[in-house]
Every structure is written in C-alpha cells, then in structure tokens.
Image (cartoon, rainbow, N blue to C red):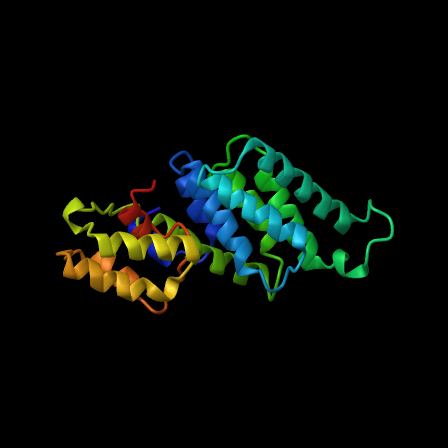
Length: 224
C-alpha cells in the first residue's frame, strides 16, 4: 500500500491488512471499541455496551482480571441471547444489529493478544449493521485513520509544546470523549509554539471522525 492509497482507502480491511504486525494491542482494541460505538444507537443491549466499556479499560491497562473475566461472561451472554440458547428471551434481543454487536465484542475478547487481523475479523460483523457492508467498512476506515494517523509520515512531538493547558485539554478530550474541544487543543498547542501542520490541521478538521485513541491526542498524552 502506498501513502496515496492509505489516504484514499475506503475499507478498513485493506488498512488493517497493511498494519498487520505493526499495530499495538491498545490501538487494535481502541479501533474495535470505537467502531462499536459508531453503532451505539443501533445496539441498545446493556450487555454489549458493558463488554465494550471493559474492552476500553483493557486498552488503557486499567481493567482487573476480574473485570476482564466479567467482560467475557457478559459478551458470551449477549451472544447466547441473540442465538436463542437462553429460553424466554425477548424478540428484541434477536435482531440483526444485536447479533452483529454481540459477535463483534465476543471476538475481541477471544484472543489473548488482539492484533490487526483479529480486530478486522471482529469489525466484519459490524459491517452488516445499517445500510450496507461497504458503508460500514468506509465508516470504520475513518476510525483507523484517526487512531493510526499516516504511517508513512510519523509525527514527532516536541516536549516544549506540553504546557499545563495543553495537557489538561488533551486529558479531558480523551477521558470525556469531548471531541468538540479538538480545535481548542489546536489553539493551545499553537500558543505553546507548535507549528506542525499535520497535528494542527487534524485537530481542526471538522469533517474528521475523532475517537478515543486519536493519534494527535495520543501524541500529547504520550500514549502508544
């Protein structure tokens, strides 16, 4: 894959295949969780949402072994509800959206180490929620770009840009998913001396999909 192909790619599958062997478990988990959250309004299963939130805590390394075990149990329970192995479950648990979400989170709990290939397998289930698989794959490609940036042009962060205002804003955006504050973070970085157009333009791009794990916010926070 070339840089031009990466920037124009409309399917997460090709991008994740390119990233195989170079994507951290944290990034893989956050890609999967962010794509799950794209369908938050369509999949209202409490079990699905709970399992996704535990996966996010796993990505940040703050989930206990007990929580992870509970996440696997909840993911399996959601899948059992969809497949009908539990008697007397309401019809709403057997919808296509519920099934796609349940399969996706269950697959993310499956491997001991989630990588690009395994997260792609999980995302494939989510493609079938909504209008068409191609639309789902295109939405997911934007998430991959937001989290991984441009692998052909890695950006270095100057520690001198890390003022208290910059750090406070970045932490708030990450923890609260306050992506409406991205342009404010760009302004704070610029005030601190940042002149990197890749960072500033990404944070100010109103058309860009932003999720937890955004490469620019990660740079500020020193996350990999």
